[in-house]
Length: 143
Length: 304
Image 1: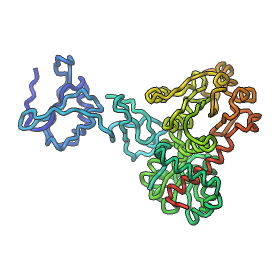
Image 2: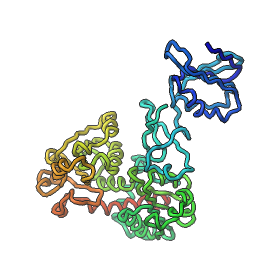
Image 3: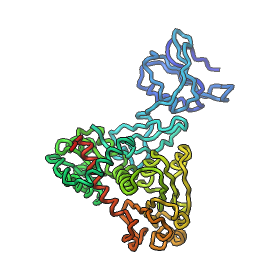
């Protein structure tokens, strides 16, 4: 079995659905951060059979994880400080998602004005429904 | 500064004030004849809509203001590729208030976010048409005396009709409203609306034939059933007459039931019904002017 060393400060994102870690890497914009990232694909899991894990070595205040709840609220977020787990973050659905999903409605103003940011607003927390801020089209994308 | 994007932007109390003002305008037109003297309304219509544009222009002229604008995208800078945000910033230098119609949904909202003047959504694609809903509400309130405790039948294309969805969303805020939806199976009101009604415990029924429920209605809101919405010609031929209101069907209605229609009417209300005192759709157009006058005054924060 492959061993990846522990991190001193940062996040360990556990229980990511197998194969989804790269998409999360991009949605968290980790490619833009100058930090160490370990992407573990298809790790053995008793609970899930297979899972992905992301280890991110960074200042814990620099990374916004809000979008994770939208992607998959089953992901476990372990906050690491001095090499130890100091917190397990509860994922709550963000009120607004900016620049992550695109509105697919061909009648939406975002379809002709390219510079407009794609913004989705949480319309129904219980049913986890997001709607485009401009045209109110329901977001059908899931990761 | 406020804008109007959706009929739900105003609380029920704010709407009451707006409708009181509209009724005062109706009864005292002279009092408001110079209220907007020196003010300009820009009608930015990126797609043709003669009725709505003329209603806005008439409203501003009745208030003593003046009107500038364009009536299709071809005669605006949009044809040169200018964004809505840039256009509204330019228009803000020319006018005091703007009514915007745009084929793309959310365009007036983008304009409002960049505008230095109030923006009124005069219809954005299939999304919102708030001044139509305000017109419908004012008509109901003026002709019945209040906005509550009545049964309204909505008939025709309830699936794609944005005026219908918008009116339902606006009416659920009032007490004692009962809805009866009359439409063919293919054009039933969408699930998200019936789910919302269930959640709010608001009574509703769905029926296919207009005749069976006519005697129970206080209002009948007619819309057009378009042939192209049907899956096949056979169904269209079979069902189309169910949704045509004629003298025969009117015999079944209460003496004080009122017929509303967002217009344009094609053949869903036969012309023989026009002379019936219960036909309120042309009075509805007049209320559209009053409510737009009240809205312009309210958004410009002008009191008379």
